[in-house]
Length: 88
View (cartoon, rainbow, N blue to C red):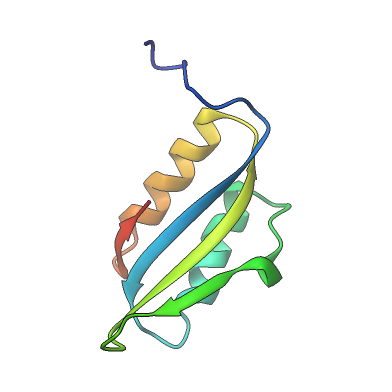
């Protein structure tokens, strides 16, 4: 499969789960990152869940993905953020 090939058909609604340290502004900062790559993302659709211990927070954002390049750039920026432990 070449770099441009993907099993996804675009445009598509694509959920991204971002997990990181629990901070007061974690969700807001992650939404700002997502909106840089998906300007039509609606922040009111964000789902959040704290870890059992309360030390971590997961933020799920469903974006309307238009290309593999868009998703790749979004994942690169999210995973480069120092607060993020993992993105799926």
